[in-house]
Length: 84
Image (cartoon, rainbow, N blue to C red; front, side, top):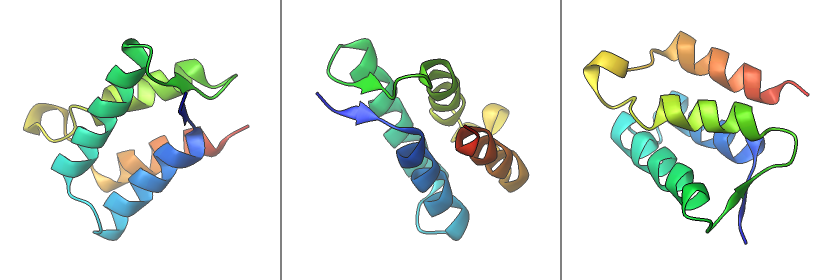
């Protein structure tokens, strides 16, 4: 069963920050990861479950104007995920 790690989410955020990924692509990726866990097709990295769920929740709607995360917010989210 796939494991969704902090590193994987940070890599996606970094791809968005570098311009290699659009807001829409990041949101779609986060949506797919979040629901894979909900459907029992994947699980979160042990010890980081809540942080990962919160991060994916924020990212999966970030392509909508009302919930868009600016670059500073994306950097802050990545920094939180990098913390032990």
